[in-house]
Image 1 (cartoon, rainbow, N blue to C red):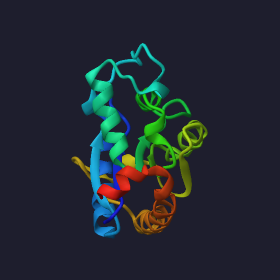
Image 2: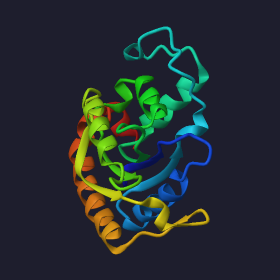
Image 3: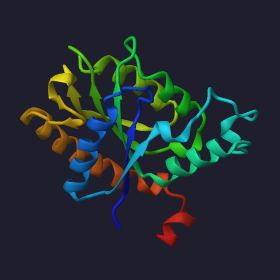
Image 4: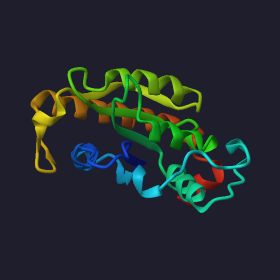
Length: 195
């Protein structure tokens, strides 16, 4: 059975270009053929500013939006974060969403497709990596960086250049290796026997 890869649209603001970039990333991951892929939109969970009364490490969630978000993150074996840079950092909505959970993130590898202006979101990636490692995640070196993203958009379609396409292939190859290596840690024994 193929490991499950969730491509997460990390921006939630109106007018975002993230869905166009994420559709390309998701289609590329699907064509890669080594993952069971799913495109996930963070905005669809409608997460308010963190509002759980109990610490997330306890997994005693009071709200349905948290339980739905927990189920989605738990389902994935690996992640591909598609995200812009806001003020040299990740989107606040992503940081808020990460705060809701603890155990669901553990021992899962993840990679980035970042986009923006001249720097293509690389500063946001570096900040996000520091946060993600506190959840025992494994952020990869391999990534896709998209500077001047608007030059690659037509209507709501993203068109990569050759460097971006080649980077995506290398990133997915490496992500697959790490995902397989970490499955023994990220999947509880009881879950492994049912899959």
